[in-house]
Length: 362
Image (cartoon, helix red, strand yellow):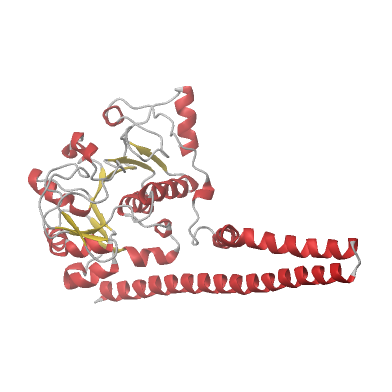
């Protein structure tokens, strides 16, 4: 059943959704996850993330898969992630290149998937912006799961919590243990933990889920939100207990996701179109003004064929032409820089793939 099919189900009540072998649960770490019994999900595919291992150890439980695609968080928890790999209770890990390199021989296993290398093949993981939550769902689809339910994805962050200290750029560090409203258990973060401001630009996580939802819909993967109070409103909502039992009827999403939401340059060859839209948004008004000046000058010249009018018309036309030349140069710079940025990203991903192949063959 596709996303749109699910919406038809909501309207007609003709079917109920049930958990099956093609279902994966993505476990965000928001407060709403406190109401979910993780052991009850053990028979099914689960993806846990980031520092939730502290709680898993308390209840002696592990998810089937683990993901951490935050460059800062991964390095901050390097030793604990290494311990998770070595205990061999988790089947597969999705990690960044910098962490894999730092882990050394511990990561020399096919159970560790290099996120940066995986993005090189224009896979589902190439969606931007990368966040651990949204890309855990995309990773689940890459692994073949066709029905995804997100839990604990609240997207209602307190950006800088009590006990955190600003570092360089958008980096934060926990320096004192305080109550933290962002997570589902006390002690999720501890002094010494480093991480990034959750939303360094407005609605980064919500937009990441919008784009992930659009991409998943394009490949006929169904995704549902198990938290009706979540800030992510672009997915149909589903009641977890009913879904695990006799079956649940999803309720419609509050937002209609248009495929145009997915504006990252790697998407299905749409990069050029997106870049044109970005350029027009940045410089369209100036171009319009220049063209209007040229047109006004020519009309004036034709309408009032006097020397002074001709001079004025020539001046306007010259100014407009100069502006268009400058505009063309700016466009060339914009296009070249965009092309170089894409090439740099592709080269980085290819280097990651080569390094990953070397890691797996040594």
